[in-house]
Image (tube, rainbow, N blue to C red; front, top):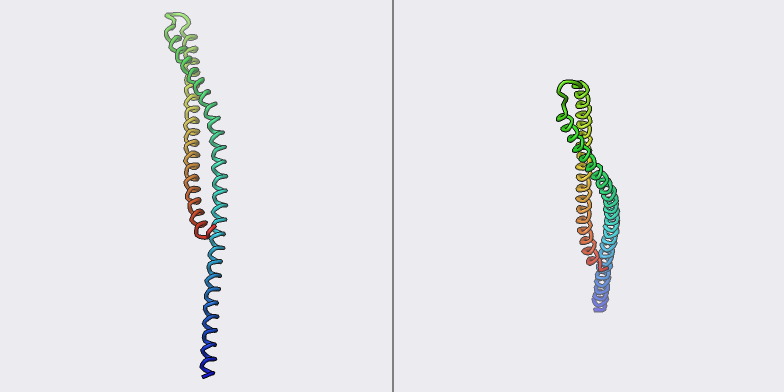
Length: 168
């Protein structure tokens, strides 16, 4: 009977050791999960920081382009005024066609005025195309910034969820 008690005591001690080993194993698993979550949080924080940097860069580019657009808009407005003046000069010159003498000079002057008008219109069209391209670039940068902000909001949600899981 002493042997049975000894074996029973030994079984209880082995059972306690097995239970202790299971607890240690669960603790180690939870610590490993916590470490993985902390690493994920650090990665998320780094990504948020990188995306914030890109948003700042987009803001700088947007400001530069917006300033260039303002200048180009003023130049295009001035060029439109020049076109209007040259159109008026061509019309005025056409109305002043001589009846007999000086037609060759008149035609040469008309050709010069029409060429200058064509050049001014071409320059105006080029400036307007440049403005359209700059405005499209501004819209692109704005869309990129908004997309980055949406992604950052999602990353913040992941970060909060991970923080709750780890218990930070």
